[in-house]
Image 1 (spheres, rainbow, N blue to C red):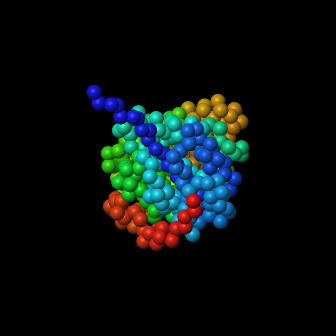
Image 2: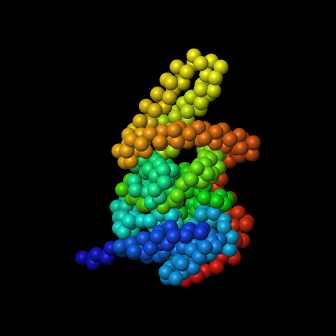
Image 3: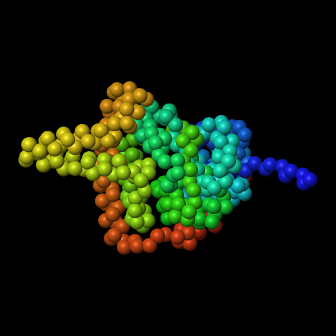
Amino acid sequence: MNASVPFSPLTVAVIVPVYNGGKRFRASLESIRHADPPPDEIIVIGDGDTDGSSQYAEAAGVTVYRFPQPGGPGRARNLGASKAISDLLFFVDADVTVPENVIERVRDIFARDTDVAAIIGSYDDQPGESNFLSQYRNLLHHYVHQNGREEASTFWGACGAIRRAVFLSMGGFDETYLKPSIEDIELGYRLKRAGHTIRLCKSLQVKHWKRWTVVSMLQADFFQRAVPWTQLIHRHRGFVNDLNIGISGRVSVMLACGLLGVLLLALWQPNILVAAAFMGLMLFTLNVRLYRFFLEKRGVRFAAQTVPWHWFYFLYSGAAFALGTVCYFAKGEGDLKGPASLVTQDARRARSRVEKRE
């Protein structure tokens, strides 16, 4: 009778890109270091940081690599992945803290379902920053992910894990995104196109500590996400009915834009205000579950404040889609990117100059 082969648990490398992460990064790193059980590797990539974040990680005893100049989280994550030797790559943003059992959870999910190539989690419902926009934004993200399909259509770099062999076979993240953008979404599109399974694990939740302001929100949503995401949609020739681009979201964008147009026309034709009221009612009804969620979590006043901000989100999302569409066809981008085209010459040269600290 053959002796049984002892079970060998999957090994996990946590990879954290950081650019001037400050106290939020320190809290993030400490939460990872105190995970129980601990990860097999912790790799921090300093993306041209100047605030001592890399030095703090060095002093904590983790492996650190540093780029001399910022080049985006995609490039930083790729470098970390190329240095890791673990079975699983677990990407965590520098402004999130993880629960104590997170490594055990990640291992168990991949061990239980060998067909899963990657998993993503979500933000929890207790955002770290107390101002209204931070609470609204992070609760909105939590709601969207908690109501998304478990068979996910994209990847998420803030809390996402992937089998190392799959990641390397796909060519990693697209390094042409030089600032935080949709490099994780783009990878998810390629994973799905290649036939890999991505699982949204709704119980895998992390706490987000980012402080949102009106300026940072518009810059991130409009220029760093919606416009390039629109171009990605056109390259892949179609929408996916999931998360932020589901059918209800698309209809809401059309209703919000139509409502604004009707209100402007009402300056000359007041009688069409009836149409505006009807469209507003439809828009509210379509998103009433979300507003009820805000009501349950933060009360009447908070929920009432979220409605105009949410409708404003639909308006600028529509504008960003229009701009992204114009940019796409103006550039004549007709072909999908492949892994061979992902790493630019500048990124390769930058990687050759990377500094290592252990």
